Length: 121
Image 1: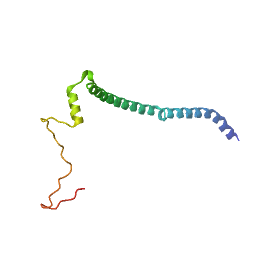
Image 2: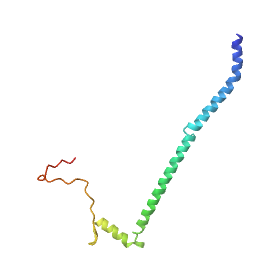
Image 3: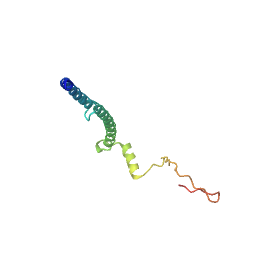
Image 4: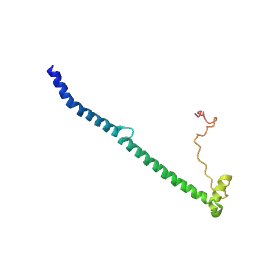
């Protein structure tokens, strides 16, 4: 009976610090690993940096396009850009223009008189 009383009296002095250590460990774990913890903050910071880089790239493209559009305004019309757009839209070209056609990706079919041709997939 004396052993049980001794264990209970010592357990009263140990239970409080053990619960405190468990509480600190719980909050420390969630401060690092939780949804709003340190690792989540670092990942969010990386996503923000990536989004900022994308925003900068898109803003630069937009600025270029806005400049090209501003050259088509009646107040400051650029004849070269107007000529380029008109020829593109109307499918016209000058007599001195050189037109380069891209190579076809298909292999030319062989003449049956020269030999057997293979079917193309």
